[in-house]
Amino acid sequence: MLLPVYRFFNAGTGTHFYTSDPSERDSVIAHLPSFSFEGMAFFAASSASAGLKPVYRFLNTQNGVHFYTISESERVHIEASLPQYRLEGVAFYASQVAGAGFKPLYRFFRSGSGTHFYTASDAERQQVQAAQSDTYRFEGVGYYVMSEGFSVAASRIFVATDGSTGYELWSTDGTQAGTTLVKDIFTGSPSGYPSEFTQLNGVYIFSGTDSTHGAELWKTDGTTTGTVMLKDINPGISYSAPIHFTLFDGALYFRARDSIHGEQLWKTDGTEAGTEMVTGAGAVATGNYPTQLTVFNGALYYQAYDNTNGFELWKSDGTAAGTVLVKDINPGAVGSSPVDLNVFNGALYFKAHNGSNGYELWKTDGTEAGTVLVKDIHPGANGSHPADFTVFDDALYFTAFQSDDDVELWRTDGTETGTVMVKDINPGLSRNAPVEPTVFNGALYFMADDGSNGYELWKSDGTETGTVLVKDIHPGSGGSYRTPSWYYSGEVPGFTVFNGALYFLANDGNSGYELWKSDGTSVGTTMVKDIFPGSGSSSPYSFRAFNDALFFSANDGIHGVELWTTDGTSAGTFMVKDINPNDGPIGSSHPNLGW
Image (tube, rainbow, N blue to C red; front, side, top):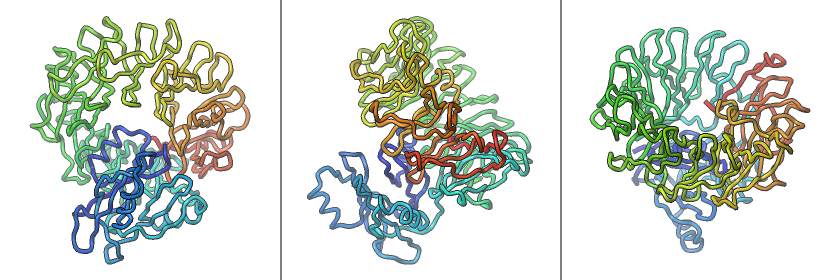
């Protein structure tokens, strides 16, 4: 059987990870934010047959990077001589010789890190050889994979306007010439507003609007002719507004509305015939309003509504019969409104209110009996409102109110006694919550206000003494980072891990809000480039790692908000293309890579 092999870019190590297992793909997407999903890289076989050999997958336990080889002698040598490599089994099957229906998969060695890069794209191979030969040594053809199918991993889809069209679908390979409009979905100056891009079986599925339909389900293979409406779920100018795209069990699940059933759970296999509503117990005519779709333990969990229980936790196996209420946490029609679903240590954690404790930390193993309150952190009706969940070093970290006016960093091992505050960073009553906890380089990084320095960069190893200020970027009480309301409004990007550094937005008091990076030390926390020279702010946002570069939107004060890229150096930080060539703010294309 032919298998699509999916590719991820690990921004923390600067390497790629490949898997043919849809469940592993879904798990990585759901739980490893440093892995950027690049889509389907190539096709391979699921089992041995004439001319096909196993491709072995090893894990380097020292750096967490995978290695793939079809060579039996290389496999034997690694197992005998390199104990840090653990054989994980057969990844897929491919050919050691060229043939009809096959294409070469090229292998490069990165001497600086001792890792490998693989690509089945001739264009990508040529680009690496031409521009990065000092970093990547070409080792030739690793093996031959199937040539059937399409991959959009060699280009990055984003949304922008060039001034003549509205906000439409664009793609870039990182070059000016390779940054082009894919399709003007809503012809002319109105916007098609494509969003919610998710890869399924080698194409992007997304929500889009054209002149005769409201927001409906679309797909693209990266070409104009291959960008088409997948299904008109709510026919005519009405809209189905598909949102909350989540990959599960080889299909894409989402919320959409039609004129009969309202907002319900839907799924698609990428075809019109295979796009259908998932009905189940509790369905009501006005809609179940499913949200917070999360894959856990072989099922899709989400918050949904019915007339009897209100908003509660549900799960589905993709069938009507297998779509059931997990538990009525807050009995009655109001519901517990479970949100912020996160998988950790064999359980699904979330916040919910049971009618007496306020919003507190809960967990479930998928059964009614196993759905329990972990800890009443802030006793009483107001609740602790746990948020910003992040898994780090065998614990689940989050922010929580320990009183009505004091929010700090907490962690849990899943038990009541093991749910504790990490450190009271700002002693006393403070609503200045730690912002965007992000795992990087063996520590948890976040922005916090200690009451003296304003919001600055902090890190924690999980202990009180190991929770420290990294650098006071903007000396004084003003802080280098804006207030949490700015972050929670979605106007700032938070942190992005890329190529061994942590990238973020900061203001040192002289250069405005610019692009910064950190290696975790004070001296290694520096501004990458003053894109908008002087006190003005370039305000970079919408970061995406792709092709060993970090792409983002920024304003240099001349071209407006346009597409930029960086390799982490000042010289390597430049505008990719002036998509909307009018000068000044009115010339901004406002590229959105975050979807």
